[in-house]
Amino acid sequence: MERVLLRELGFKTRNEALAFLKRLWRQEKAACPICGNEMEQLHKKAKKSDCDWQCKNCNKTYKTMYLLDEINEQMPE
Ligand SMILES: [Zn+2]
Image 1 (cartoon, rainbow, N blue to C red):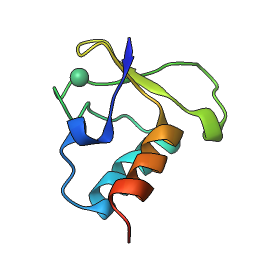
Image 2: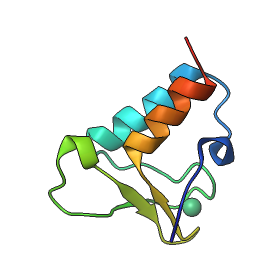
Image 3: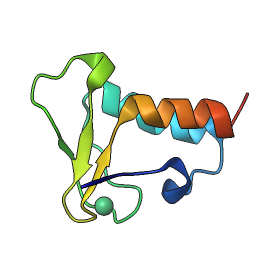
Image 4: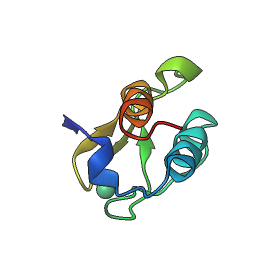
C-alpha cells in the first residue's frame, strides 16, 4: 500500500483538512475522500499519535502525522 498524499484528497481549505484528520484521531468512522469507501484502522488500539488508517479500495494508507505535516507545509494558517 502507498501512503496517500494531501494533494490527492482535494481539500480546499485547511479547516476542511483538519476536520478530516480530527475524525481519524477520534477513531470515528470516516469515508475515504478519494472513493467514498469506509476506511479501516491500520492498527487496532493505536495510540492517538500513530492512529493510521487505510482504504482497501484505493490501496492507500492514511498516515495522520504525515498528513498533518503536509497540511502545515501546504496550507499554512
Ligand atoms: Zn478509497
